[in-house]
Image 1 (spheres, each protein chain N blue to C red):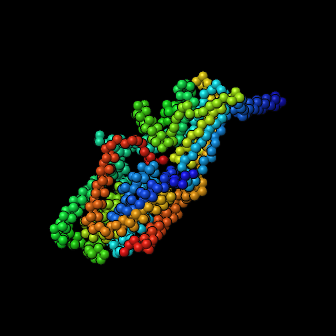
Image 2 (image 1 turned 90 degrees about the vertical axis):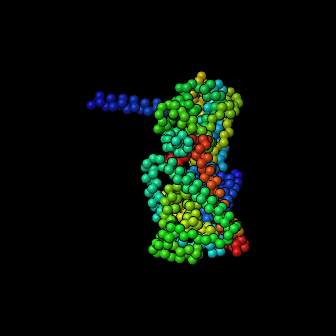
Image 3 (image 1 turned 135 degrees about the vertical axis):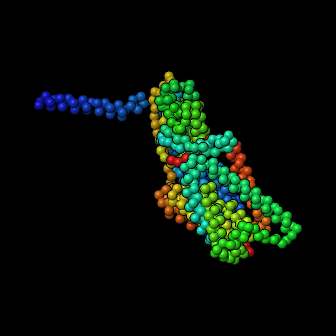
Length: 308
Length: 267
């Protein structure tokens, strides 16, 4: 008997306890810092550990429930969660998720689903990462020369202002039509469902650039929104697919709940632009990693998860 | 009428003799030559909280002039796996699924000498001993022709070997002759990747390139304790299992948040 190893009853494999706890800590840190769930990092790492892909994805969402609760709590204490905005985004995300699931069915019927999904994923990560990187770099330069940032009134901005149901979001200090967060929440929801990820890395830029919320409120609000998404996903996965591994989730959350707290504390020491540029770099690194995986010859040509 | 009765009696006797013959033949077939025995130690493997694989030893006796092959298999079944291929000559992705039929999830073969040196091809095929025989035994679909079957069979073996479920060795069975009998022994690692179930251990005694005798025993792998409870709950009571998982995650998140506040981590 070796106490360093625990057996996972649903994944049907054994892991060294330090690995998931360490992974949880690292990914939780990212959660607390940037308001992302970190599924785009965690799920592939779990698969590398020998966890079946379906169990990896489902268990990760269970773990994110804990990490995002911990992170939301930490951000809420310092007033960085816009519950009203979060709620509208959630409504949109829920509707978008329903459409996304249908979209997957259609894609699967056309036969080339995997290609489309992977390509969408790479493109999205690449575009979002590059845009955030360039934008935050240029605004960091600007900030050095002129402290006051002038708000540009674009055509899109004027259009958004002309929509009905305008309401003020106090925590974020912005005024939008209620339809705007619902629409963008829905858009992220569709993409997230198609790509099989939580969508935090899409939601954060949407809130920063389209909803023009301050970065620190974005992180807290994103975590709040992710929390509810992951509760729903965990329940559905456990109920319909039986793929949540409780023991693995506990090991992961031991690290991730603490990581999220450290991330939240650390994040307060950085300004919004610094946070954005680090997140952009991480997103770009993940993009490069996925592209290299797609182009390098794999070590095994078969993998699990083709059905029964 | 009388004649009919006699005929009826004759018929009964014939049926009885046939049954008796079959019964004795069946019941004593293993004992008749009585040379080969098998016993597996640690043959009841319990998967508990700290399970990280096990070891299984197989030992027994045989005729001194025989070679031995020990085969450990899971029950036969089928598996559907995703296959990777190149799209547009550039990108590696899942291009479809392959169905592998008449396969064993776990298959390990240990022999005293190289299989091809001690056993004829007809015999290996008959008893499904060794990878070439396994390839003939299994069906892979969809594949076009034998070349593609070869390719995917090799990939299948590599996939299984990567998770330690397939294994072959020769020369690792230790043997000693004692009291005119060959005593054999092998200790093998039991991979934690092998799921719960009953596994069959068969030893084949081989002489003149033929299997002259075989004996079988079982290895039982079973989940116990918390592992069993959780596994059953996940399968049979998904809703409750999901709710408990969520509540514990929420509790852990809040709990850690509280601890950090008390610890002064935030301001």
